[in-house]
Length: 204
Image 1 (tube, one colour):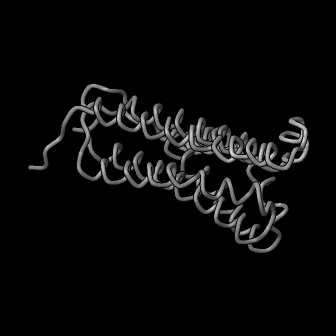
Image 2: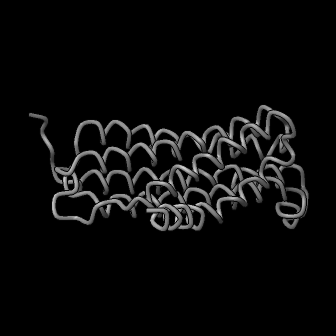
């Protein structure tokens, strides 16, 4: 029988990796200071001449923060972890640890197709990991133990959110400059999931 252990250590380890990734995001901005000093340029140019890098930092900080919040919401349904859950969690951590790299590329190359695809592809992979974790938790009651089960609405919210990221990747293939705006659709998956389930209940 597959061994399942307390999820507490896994959550602590995950939080530490996320904190490191958030810290790494700011390093490209701190590297600007020595360049300004060497070139004898005013300090204000660290901001005025680097809006794209600042934007990419803020965007990715918010994205990682959101993913972390969602991850914690998922693990509220977990009391013991399985091997499958650990593997998928590590894949999710890979996407989070990788994110500072495409973030720096965005700051330098902005809407270049490869850069946008790399960034949004990383977000899509992260979202798919979340969806897979939710699926694993729903399928294995031993992971949940006495915790609340994952609702259908939560599951379909994750599925629809992954769909939004996938749509953004498709748009990036055609028009990279518009792809980021697709992410605004992330405001709606929870509402759509609730509406669909309400419709299904009404039909029954």
